[in-house]
Structures are given as C-alpha cells and as structure tokens.
Length: 196
Ligand SMILES: [Zn+2]
Image (cartoon, rainbow, N blue to C red):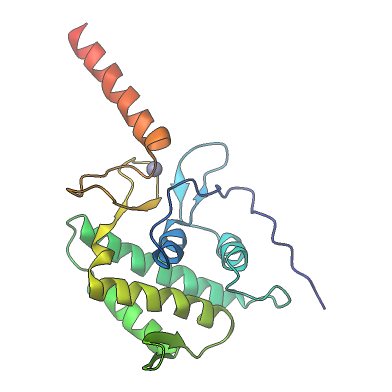
C-alpha cells in the first residue's frame, strides 16, 4: 500500500478565516483554496497538489490512492465555478458557463436525493465523490439562502472566501486582524498623505 503524505504544499496558506456554520465550512474552505506566488502575499488559484492535499486533510479522499491528474483538474474547475457564484453575491452578473459546469458536475458526481435522511448524496467515488459532497452542501445553501452570505475578501491580493455574519451584510475582509487591519493601515496612511 502506498501511503501518500498529507504534508501541506509549500505555497499554500493555513486557512485563518473564521469558519462558516456547520457543513457550509466545507464549501467555504474549498472555494477559499489558493496558493501564493512564492515569497509574496499574492494569491493565485490552487495547484493540483494543493487541491489533493485539502481533500485529504478534510477526510474526503482516502489516503491510499493517488487520484488522476485529470480528476484534480476537473475539481479545480468546479472550485472556480463555485467562486463565480460567490462573485454573484457581490453584485457580479451570473456566468452561464459556470452554471453549466455546476449542472454537469451534479450529474458527474451522481448526486441523488435521499428522502429518508432528507439529504443529497453523491454516489461517485474518489475525487468525484469528494466534490459531490461539497456540491450537495452548496446546492442546499443556495436553496435556503445561506449561500448569499458567502463573499470574497476585498483585499486585491486575497482569494479567501468568508461567510458574512454581520447583520447588515457589510463584511469586507476574510479576517479583521489580517486583511482588515492591513486595509485600515493603508487607509490611514492615505489620509495622512492627503493632509500632509
Ligand atoms: Zn483576505
């Protein structure tokens, strides 16, 4: 048996954004996945290695099988399609291509309804099954409206997605002490410069 390492890839951050409620955290963590341009804070889409690492870390993939690269690439595509749904929450118009991708993914992950458990289930195995579990949560969140609280961090270098808990949905940053603080410092410096 080949045991895969679950070591964190080099350019991946540990996620410091506060968790979304319940199962929604699975979706939030997935769509937040990103790498950094080496030695900088600039976020870029996750490498396939990062996607695999994250799925393993969250117990969605068994550790003794190496997934196909094509499956990981497919998963990364679903991640981007879900992100485009997050961008809709921030006022962008719906992207028909992304919606198609998600509809297709629901079939590819063999999502089916379970009346007894009042749940959606994925009948697929491996990476498809893992993504199916995430899609099931995302779809139910769209139905009950909780999806609308997902937002992307306003920092231009950050790809983190957070669940906006604020009453008037005015949240802007993945974390107050990280991106929020840096924005405050930047705004302060700009004010200082303007008055100097
Ligand atoms: Zn951020």
